Image 1 (cartoon, helix red, strand yellow):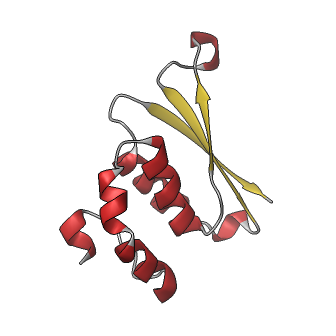
Image 2 (cartoon, one colour; image 1 turned 180 degrees about the vertical axis):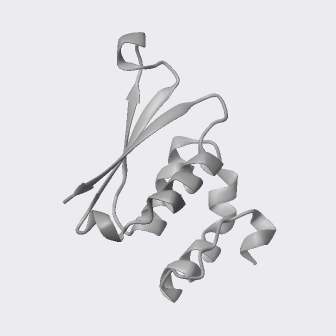
Length: 104
């Protein structure tokens, strides 16, 4: 089912998260390429509320650059490669990003 709406489903995820991702898949697809869509997808994947910090001026690296911050209990437990793949698939094509995975 996940492949029908172009979701990256990781078989290593707990079943509850995979079911939630599939359940919310059409909403995620509708919001693809937006801040809302990226936040929702990362929230499901990481199980925490992600933050997106937008850099709006050239001095900050902007205007088309943002930073994703995930504050988790154990940063070593997060698959950074998977998080980056999610961000690459869900972000607007013309933007760049930085990723910070930090301890809560």
